[in-house]
Length: 110
Length: 114
Image (tube, rainbow over all chains, first blue to last red; front, top):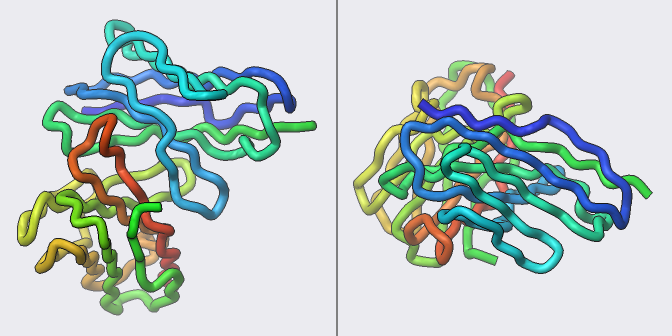
């Protein structure tokens, strides 16, 4: 079975740093994705981690610890446009199916 | 943007009627997926396809069927719509999931079953 947990909502201030956590308990693992979804729009790809450690991509970084079943998405220098839902998803062993967590709604305030 | 078109974008239908949603891609990707998104549940996989005429069930496949007769088209059918199928439906494509080929999503179809 698959169990992926994320906080439901978070609030942060413009210009600050925020960390969105994701924990997973899955029967198989072949990598973890993060997606961003603005209200009323389609999810868009942010990052993919398959090895332990930190992957940095501009203002966004993603971390993975496979032994702990844990990942986080780090957003730096927050901007108002970062207000969105952030979805964590685990790829199965066969590499053909993604299972998503419920998503974290981030509100950035001035 | 990945070339994915979903149609219709919005639909209202009555309980018990059949409904077909269409996903069309211009990327020639092998894998196509249908997800539904509901508050409190996130994105849940309904069915997916790994080639023409090759499909498999996801975690919430009951009440849904799919067909893929051409690489570019993936159809989702609700044989007899129920109110519990009111949702936003997303189609997604991939060449093979990983760093170089994440899922790319269409813009979604908002379906309301009255």
